Every structure is written in C-alpha cells, then in structure tokens.
Length: 190
Image (cartoon, rainbow, N blue to C red; front, side, top):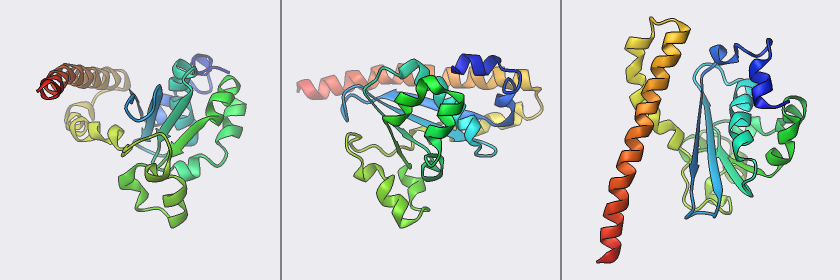
C-alpha cells in the first residue's frame, strides 16, 4: 500500500491529528554522493505508525537513491520491527527500507545505552561524514514562537498557519544559501 493510498484510507485519514511529524530531507554531496538524510520527530507521542507514515511519504519520492541515512531519536527501538511494519503497511517500499542506515542524533545519543552509542552513532557510520543528525531540531526554537497564536486555532487553521510558518522558514534558508555560496566562492577564489 502506498503512502497516498494510506492517506485516503478512512482508518488512517486523521493520523496527522494524533501526532505532528516533522520530516526534513537534505542532500549532502560532500559526505557521500547522492545521499539523503531524513529525520522524523513527533511532538506528542512517539508512535511508530506516525513516524513510519512520515518516513514512507519521503521515501516514496526518494526511493531511487542508492544510499540513504536517517536520524531518529529512538532509532534503536524504531528499527527493531521496521521491516515487518513496512511489509504490512508499505510493501512497495520494503526494498528501500532494507538499504537505509538509521542513526541517533549526536545530542540524543548520550542518553542511550553504550550499545546504542556504538551501533547507531553517526561517528561510526560509513558514508555520513561529520553529520550531527540534529538538523531537524533547528526549527523547533523558532516554531515554538507560533504556539501563542496557534494554540486557540482549530485544526485546519493551525495546519495552515504552521504550513505558512515552515514555508517562510524554508524560503529564508534558500535566500541565505545564496549569500553563503557567494561568500564561499569569494574565499575559494582568493
């Protein structure tokens, strides 16, 4: 079952209201060619159906990439039955899920067991370079400022407001990337 099919499913159509997932995809050509990092975070309860759905929505668009790595605060728990869950809900994405490497972000991994630190650390994962895995967390400080205006809104209006906020956030990043690129080119040419 594909992510759009699940989205139209009556049993799962209101899934977005039960948890808020934030998914970011960023290409990192310096660390490994054609790699993508996907991070998922749930605001309320960490429910695997919500995070699996968020991940599947991204993977459906990126399934042709040869190498993928994602960061998740509880990757050590999430990965235990991930393939079985995807076989049930997203069978077309099982081959993609089997070739994905999952890691725990560097700030979060310190609160895990030693075994997790060795198995899921970006430091010991080949092909990810000096990734910290915390990129997904950077929006929360700014996004928390929307709480005052969105806490009294109905679900539809809140969704639109947050969508507008994150759209503006992304636009700001794109504008600033141009300035950074120009500065890097100037330094490189001197």
